[in-house]
Amino acid sequence: MLLTVLGTATPYPRPDDPCSGYLLQGEPAVDGGRTTVWIDAGTGTFAELQRHITLDQLDAVVISHRHADHSADLLVAYYALRFSEHRPGGPIPLIAPEGMLERLAAYLGPNSVDELPRVFEHRPMSGFADATIGSLSLSWGPVQHGVPAFGLTVEEGGRRFAYSGDSAPCLSLEEIGERADLFLVEAGYDRVPDGVPAHHTPEDAGRTATTAGAARLVLTHRAETLTGDEARARASAHFDGDIDVAVPGLALQV
Image (cartoon, rainbow, N blue to C red; front, side, top):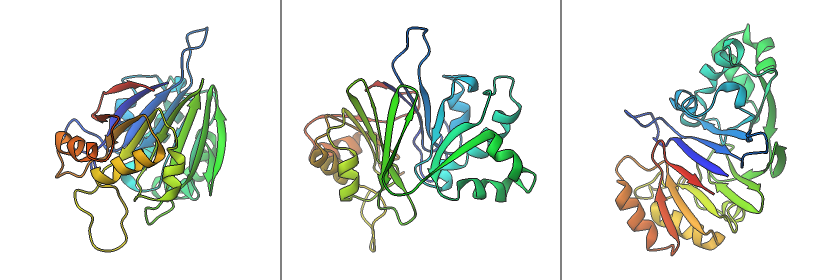
């Protein structure tokens, strides 16, 4: 599998860094095609997605949770998937928390209520579940973020990719990331605030990856006060494997 970072910023896009979004592609088939999944549609990521694929190559979209910095570009994708000359021949599977289409319709207006199911085939996330998209086996489960939020695992050919979405450290995320060849984990906190946590610090990310037995850690969605070097150094105190810092355009083989 090939993971390409589209954006990492939180909670709003910065110049040259859209919000959270990732392109995951399976290994090329005999005909040269490959299964293609857009993971999180944060603000600005739809334009970056089109640097790498045309819309008719998109096989599915996965949204970890409904916060705008992970889902807002579904709004512009809706128009493109309806009207682009490269639009797919049918609705795209949209694996997302319950209520996603209703939230889009509330913004797009009443005329979209009938059109949205022609663009997106919504497969609501609830609890632990799985799906097969082309050559990729997807599974997901709830994580701790204060709203319905899900971590994701994708497997192909014995290789395993895992993604935290937005989450505080929790047992379910450790299980989702278990034995991942590449574990993409957010570091949305520089320091843990008072109250119930909703994100990882870099130290948390290192501990989560270690407990999960992951081979490689990629830090993403960093707090704006954290540089990449700082985040890597702090995570490395708790994780002995390779650590990368996600930046737009970074491509990693899983």
